[in-house]
Every structure is written in C-alpha cells, then in structure tokens.
Length: 215
Image 1 (spheres, one colour):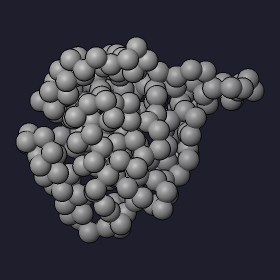
Image 2 (cartoon, rainbow, N blue to C red; image 1 turned 90 degrees about the vertical axis):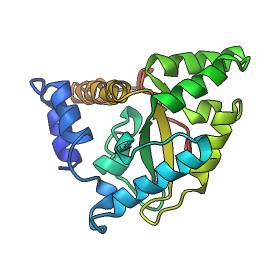
Image 3 (cartoon, rainbow, N blue to C red; image 1 turned 45 degrees about the horizontal axis):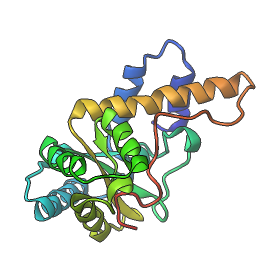
C-alpha cells in the first residue's frame, strides 16, 4: 500500500479513522526495510535498545520500539508534508520509544528543572498527548541531553539518521498518531472542496529537522 491508497481512504468518509490508523500505521513491513535482510529491522531495534540501556540504565524491549512516520509508511502523514515520499538520503527513521520508566524519570526531572514559561508551555502540550519531544528539552535537562547524544550517535545506511520520541504507553502513541489521520483527512477534504489555503494550526506538531537525532 502506498500514498494513493492512503489518500483514497482519507477521502472516503465511510472509512473509520481507527481502521485507517491500524491498516497503515500499525501493520505491514516498514518501507525503509523493504528489500533488506529479514532481520535488519530487528537488529536496528536491538541496537537502539542497547543504546537506551547504556544511556538510562533502563531495559527497553525491541517490541517497545515502533518504526513510524515516513520510514514505515513510505510517505509523510504529517498534514503540511502529506504524501512527501521517504528519501533515504534526507529522511530519518523515526522510532517511537514506549517506556513509562524512562518517561517518568524524565518528567520528574522536568518538573524540578525550573523551565521558563515558553518551554514549560510546550512541554505541557506534549505531556497532554503523553510524549516528551527531545527537540523541546534536549538542552534543558540531563535526560534530554543524553537522549539527544544517544540518537545522534546511531547510524544506518537505510536513512539519513535515526531519531526517537518518547511515549509513556502505547495508547498515547496511538492517540497521537491518530491525529495525523484526522488532520490529513481534513486537509484533503478541504483541498477537494477547493478551499485549501493556509494550513490551520494543528495539534500534531512535528519535531524540527533532526529532532531526537542530535543533529
């Protein structure tokens, strides 16, 4: 399945959002590993899990690492880049790291860190969705610095780099990814009606380039 199929489902008013989410985001082989050795994705996740243990002394099972975004789909689901193909020379492999243990440690540090008002507002927005975005806090917390450095040191010949976003649980990850479906559908429906202008403010904020990768 590719972007034409995804676009068709988004434009189908009878296609349930959760059906689209499960069909595209949570099933099938990740695009970035098509044609690779059968165990290459597993090896990459094992490498990430070991790096996380080295950085945080918390064990993360490879099942807690989910390849997502354009690396999984083959195209971007983010509204302002909807349908943009994955490019191994310029695109990163986005990995959702699902770990309540790391999340709670990092959150506790942020609570005690005396963040400025602007940063605290961004962190509060992210926490509402159940994730911590390293692009926001990599320079204001020790856990953020460790995360930024860790992902910045990871290498792969399948993509430009590897970056990670931390979720407290799988439900938070799914709920946040669900917003990409909702807002992507809204964008296409508005375009189809001939009314598409400037993209409205979206609750699906995308990290800055290199977020989580340390670049």
